[in-house]
Image: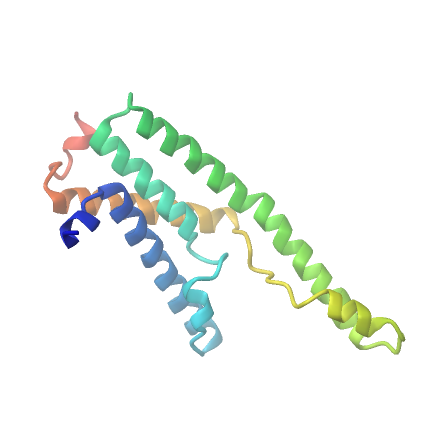
Length: 167
């Protein structure tokens, strides 16, 4: 198989680029905040910016550039983007809060002399508390995805710098 074929789908390309860029920015921000590099942030959920939002918004805008507003591809990408961003700020955020509360309970039990605490600690491992996003993290991820998509399309030469606004 020709390697160029592997990179021939612009929707996949822009999605992967947006996701990777968001994860790298998230990892750099985490390293600055905590003054140490945490390689798990390269693939971890939650944090600024939202890589899920970046990925979906870049795919959505690129599908608009390539197929137009009336296409099924754009419609599907748009709807899935809304679901992903809603999920990031709603369900996944709530799950992160639940994980934080459970971790606090396990820590509290660790500080008491209850005989059954080891059974509970064995049953509940330390949970990931960074599952979802604040609205601003989703918006920043979306803006990152839109920027990556626009730059990608300009580099492909399929659109002029502002021509998509006046099409």
